[in-house]
Image (tube, rainbow over all chains, first blue to last red):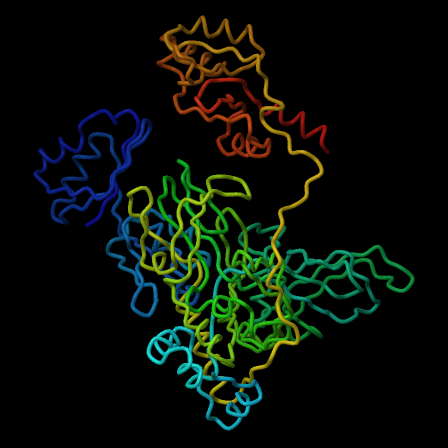
Length: 128
Length: 500
């Protein structure tokens, strides 16, 4: 399952990911990481049965954990298959089919939301 | 030599023997049969495009109220329409924004809502006169209540358009969509192989009076569009059609984040194949159409081209810039462009649509000039202060505080030994450090990512940067990053106060 981990400024310098991997033995697979001087964000895949252990290990060190289980939803009536979304998605959720329809692979979605603003027709929303 | 007449083609449409293909299908036919063979075999080639066409709008006639009003201002769902003509005519433009909802809703949405038969709130005001005594009017209308709803678009169906990218370090929101930093993506528009004007680049058959597919109904080309620039292959069309007959599948309101509203419009133009020269033109492929990728990070009408590409490369999904693979996105729908070319083909085959010769050819020699500006745009270099004091990174807080007291600015650029800008401290940074009892070197407390201006930039550009970054001063640097001055929001306000 996909999770998003946020690190506030004061714990950024700590080797938290290394610590929690050693502690839980989980195969945490990082798919995206953004870290600057004030904030850190990591998107990762984790085994479902180890989620609770990972979450506890992270939150006890001051990080916050969100499960990414609300992938993007498309309003088929609004979508015109232009493909504006294709190039802004960091994880390639959108692609063109043979007939130039825009296909979606929502499994990949990390809920960053950039496609919502890009879509000229307001056809994309994050699920609830 | 193949020579056909419009009359012969229309007779074939009438008796059902007409041979119609789309511009996409024509490519293989010309490859296989040659131009002469294709001209014999095919009577009409259909084109199609479906993309954002901002220069679109609709003339509406509301009928007279009792007592009558000569509208001087009118709003439809809070979007202002232009009514500087006789009493109850108004032009609703696609990009005009709602006064209450901003970019969420605009003229394009009013147009789509009209076609969908939705009710629209109308508010109008007037000074009143002996012949038109009414001063205020509020009513609710639908498209059926209007005498006319005539779409009249000053500039549609660009022959081709440039592609867009962004070399800067921040995200840009443009009419070409969201452009990610550091050449993060490329966006492009237009239908390439199906582009109406690219299939008739010398305007042999498309001209004033040409009957076309417009928004799902029959419409007409009025003539060349505004900014028609055939010399650079940027031809445009002025177009009209009856909104009451249009289909909302082909007329769709859109919002570009941070830019505003636009109208996605479906246009399809038939090209009668009168001879082999016309047949050859319609065999154009995506690989034949070249366009520039412009850098939208440069806030100028002359944006530099990063690279030249073909539509085939753009449509492949990625292109290379500086050795990096950059994903591409169309903003127009090729799927719907194809559907339009297909639908127009069906109309012609079924005898519901006839081709015609233009009453007048489109100009082939005009250019699109830039604006004549009689007042010089002031530059940062004209109003910046040059008596800016700077300080070294290894100075302490007290030295910085003294410098700020000596100078007339709250901002103190920090420069290295060779006078390169490395940071900035403000009076606020110093107060904050003092409040925390932190008397470190400046290096510890300065902001390293300094937002700067250059002397040759227009004031408006610097003002927007101040605004976007929520800062009140920009050090002005030369090409070598040496600090040569400073420009503050105060300088700009004073200048604007003089200007207006």
